[in-house]
Length: 182
Length: 173
Image (cartoon, rainbow over all chains, first blue to last red; front, side, top):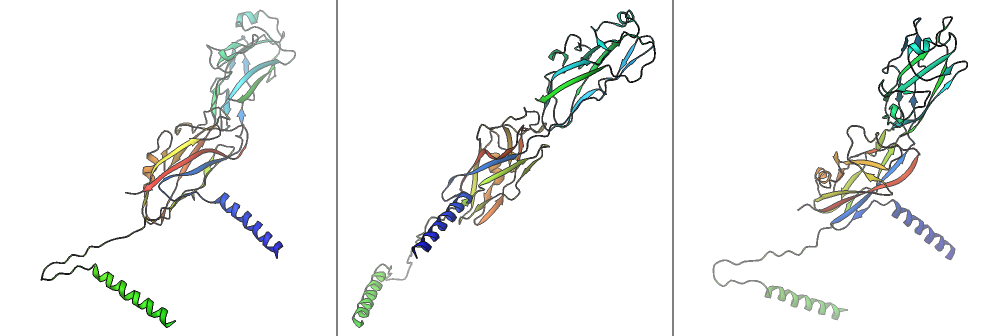
């Protein structure tokens, strides 16, 4: 009998505690009643798109045409802001990155010497020479790119030594954008 | 037994005479006044607010809140919410409702939220939401609508208290 009674009492205690835990807060006199705001959150989706290619077209006279900033851009499809923390331009042999100068200088290089130069930035004014290294001054590094398809335009310009034979879609470098949450 | 009954009956008679002794007699045609006297208990005050106001933030930034929250007035008279005060908890801070970016322009992982109750921004405003809730009739309830904005989070969060919402409630005078 005592055992039954003790089990009954234990059950009563447990049920009583549960009821207290889930009871809605009531007030029996004028005053304050408190509700808790409880958040359950998933980690934000990280989804950033960088250009697959940064095309550079070199004409027979050495003039260069690149994609415009409306075409070359980083798009942030994440739900939060992201930023580019670093940009590295890695040569693809036999191509070698040299200082960005001008077409006349590059005409002075031997044909098929596989020299190129690259400038990157958000516009032509702030674009920086990749052979020196890219900094925040380029406007590309450390800038918040808004979520939900915010964009960061990429302006780039290039120079190339002449070719003896025509080239078509030859990879001359990898441009590596390191991207993180802002 | 008979003795007990007779004593009770005698007492009843005496008490009845006593009641008559307080009657107002008039001895000539005219007015006689009776006072209507009330003895009443204070009305029961009993109001229930939601224990929790859940918010779910999906990975794509979508916010989901409960649509079943309500304030229930179990009192015998109408009550009124006179203030809604929101206080951030666990390092979370409240931000004004962001109609432009919905807080998506905040640093990822920032403990920042915005909250609307009854379509009114509760940031630094305890009156608007309360006014929107208004009076709740006796034994009635009012649906509590709310919406939230949360800065994007780097890591998942499991049912964490980010704020207290204090409803100040009194009789609707």
